[in-house]
Image (tube, rainbow, N blue to C red; front, side, top):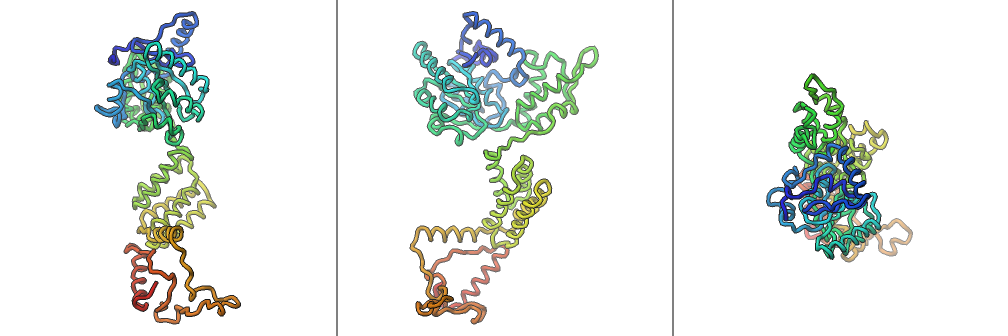
Length: 481
């Protein structure tokens, strides 16, 4: 397999010389234009390439230029080994926008001796997919070369479209490279997923974004190097921070900011300062789908932070959810559940706080209810923890479902109706208040010896534990509780 620098095809020939189905690319370069229609398309592609945005022009051309994703692209890591060895199999790239999924597909197009087609899950039909499969089979039969099908927004491929790919992905005729911002374990067919290797992309670090921005400013071929741009460090740092790990957004903001600035002096210098950076990127965009991973991951983080007694983490996740537009009533419900499940009788007031927070949240709504929710979340995080009550009901429920049903002891059955005495209901019942300490010395309540509630020594529950020990001593030794 040739090294990346030996590949003759350009980035634009890969992504813009594609027509409907994508570019046909091999290590020897793209397939040539042989008829008038091809020449017309070549002219169109050149025009598109010349006007491509900075974020597209600056996409790396080799694996060594790709920044971030060291977990699988670092030296000796799995995907780098796969690409170096040329043993490419179907891949699914999953992660937030602007983290390099399409970029890596570009690198794969440069490095593999395969035909390469690009599709978009939002606009591709089953007919388009079948056409590529037919061409892939013909190419494999005539040249022995496989076909890479890069499908952007793979999660938008419906089940029927995904199923069309199954056989040819399995037999190796088609090598699928899919990119998605949605969790593939929810959006991609299980059979197709089992034939692919999933790589999860993380947002780029700020220093990676800074490096990309500086590359773009210095690059005279694809970037802004010919414009004599002088960028302040604090301006680039602002873009790197506010872009939130999205390289595309940072480069787009840089291009907008630079191109909108006046030229200064005889040297026609363009100054890109902090004010220009703030105007070009404006407010931070937060990716948060109320029914997607962000919703479930953030709510999980909130609950676990409260359970783990970390008020700072808990209030951060609360702020993130509210800022992203999460329904505050959903958060209030989670707080109420945690008050019973993870605090319980270690601090019975937690239930009161949760109930009040839910009622206030429902009555006043945002933005004021954020104050109430913050107070409740911090209280839960700082309260002593016990799941003894939760464990008691879970264990008892398992016994109810899986063991023999226990009859109610006759002595504590309802005896208020006419004829109850004839049935023996309530006979032998001991009224607790008639005995010292308010504890009946010899009374059965369950009929079997078992313990469901085991209080901890934390918070108020230690007093409950002491009370139970004291009450036990008042009962007749050997009695069934």
